[in-house]
Amino acid sequence: MGGKLKALFAQTDMTVGKPWKQIVIFTIPMLIGNIAQQLYNTVDSIVVGKYVGDNALAAVGSASPILNLLLVLFIGISMGTSIMVSQFFGAKDRESLSKTIGSTITLTAVSSLIIMVLGSVTIRPLLKMLNTPASIIDWCTSYLLILIVGIMGVAYYNMFCGILRGLGDSLSALVYLLVATVINIVLDLWFVAGLQMGVAGVALATVIAQMVSAVLCFFKLKRMTDVFDLKFKYLKPDMENIMTILRLGLPSGITQAIFSMAMVVVQSLTNSFGEMVIAANVIIMRVDGFAMMPNFSFGTAMTTYSGQNVGAREFDRVHKGAKQGTIIAAGTSAAITALILIFGKYLMGIFTNTSELVTLSANMMKILAVGYIAMAVTQSLSGVMRGAGDTMTPMWISIVTTVFIRVPLAYGIAHFTKTPELPGGRYECIWVSLLISWVLGAVLTVVFYRIGKWKNKGLE
Image (cartoon, rainbow, N blue to C red; front, side):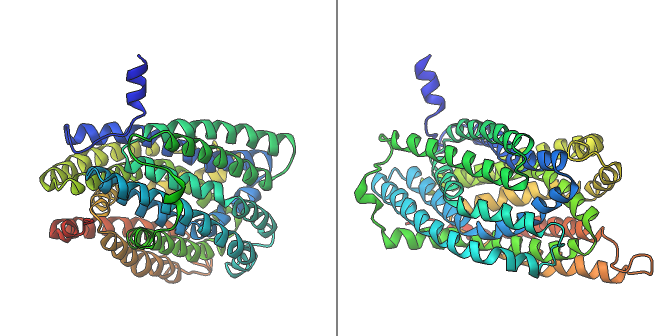
């Protein structure tokens, strides 16, 4: 029994076995983990909305795009590390694997300190630049400041999870995240409902919970001596490894930065429609986070699967897994989307007691429905390309769909739908533009996957 339990928490060699089975087995714990991760933000929103009010809910939502923008460097480091770890693990290169992990730990520490300093001094100016309503700007500032000061816990958790995923171990990260999620929920209720700390209490609860999950992940990695060495000599920065991590990871970080900047720009448009639309957007994005979880989970699974098999030079197996994984991801997304459409109003009612806000949020969620299936295709095939070392193509697709399609469409629709009754235009522009960008992104991703240049990007 002990041996079976130990095997569940071990690294997984995805170069053997049935591709679809390996992908699904790897994805399920990660999907549960991603849902638990989403609970951080969702519980924050529910507690704030119920115990503080709709304006506080709007404050937490308005802060999210700025926080995501400040986290892009860690997303890049995590992605670059995961790709290198998966390929070196697939190639059975212990020395390179150890150097990569050691360099990443040092790189994350330096990056965290930089973000803490830069983030602390830019938060309020950014909020003012975005026309954040005066009624919520103080709440937004305090929420973001606490999260930025505690950024190291978030950074190391994401980085350690990237390493575990690259090694094929998605279950350990799940267990640690579930522990942290419970801590987060308990602290949310205590700090906000009990101690009346408002949005600051929500931020503090999240920071503490993320730090706990990071520490647990670190001790798990320290025990994996059969796979790599976590010694002091490997913590010395290896510039070749660091440059490769950044080369592979920064396109993903830039992709997220572009997406976050677009969200910031669109948030400014959203803010112009007033607190009710801001709060509706917060609710939709929280539900959207759950709807998108299977897509992100399958995308990450495909990155690990592709990375290990490219490292082992098994390209036929990569193609087979890409096809099977994408079909399963699209089917899963279709089922979840149907549930959201059927039970939409009940989901929105969790966040607020305001009936008008519930109806508005549910109606806008229907606009996005088909887009989740398109995103399943985009995430799965982008994951294959990233795992092979081609992180540039998904980045360019994201730039095109976000900068040149989503943002101009949102503002364009708002402009051309202005009337005396609607001086700012129709607020539906926020979600219609997002849907169109998702669908076009899926089309472009399929085209570039079929062209196949990603097959020549593997690490030597």
